Length: 331
Image (cartoon, rainbow, N blue to C red; front, side, top):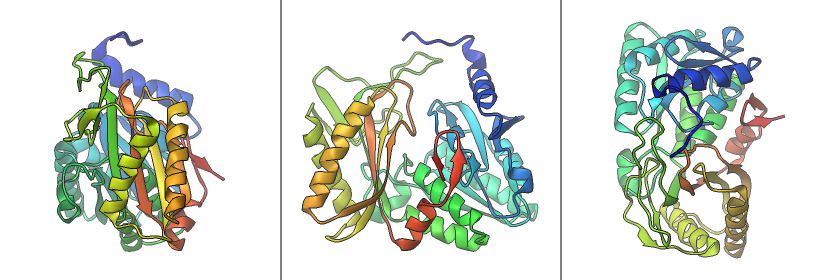
């Protein structure tokens, strides 16, 4: 796989250097690969910290800024950072009002997150953790602790960040973020796998005439390997599974997210979106908010993540609140 990179050993350093140079008014870069909100030092409120491996841009660097994430601890490509920089980021982010740590449910991320919370609490820092576990393909809802974290992290950053900006205390921000996390569901369809930019390993293999519904974001098998289907057929299959998982009823209001994995075009996403809307209209289910685009990518993987979340008036208020980040802004 041909890529415009230099020495692979310096890939994450150069990625973050370039990102911060491109957005100097929004973010700064601290040691240990910590991307920080420029306005953090004057933030007299609960702050939001998250962590994860590089290689999924714009997530989560692109959502560091006012009204979303305050500090993102970046690991190597597809690898979670260790505990030490997460502790450093939480200590740096603490403005005396407490810190919410958002962690995607993957083994290494969870290990670093749990250990960091324990260490920071021992230091007297008020910190809570909310886990993103929205992948419906690898465990039933009554075993949500086994579900992988997917693109649901992005709208969760928005909800939690807005609640913090509104002056809610740490307990309130945590409860709001957790309530949203408990009401979301995500499913991935893949048609081509990514290539790891350092090792050159192919993360998932496909023929020209197959796809996988339920694939993990790094190419993990999801048990839904089948013949390639049209955009409309795929939209109905995925949306139906998500609605069943959340037990969505007629008359409810939803957030709908379509996230391209890196090689899927906006053309394809909009074609899928129109089918989702017509399918939901038939069921008298309303989409009151959406995100469509490349939000959490996996290099040049092809396919998309479809995410829905049950919304109420309070969550919509936080969703529609102002934010300013490099890759998502509301005025």
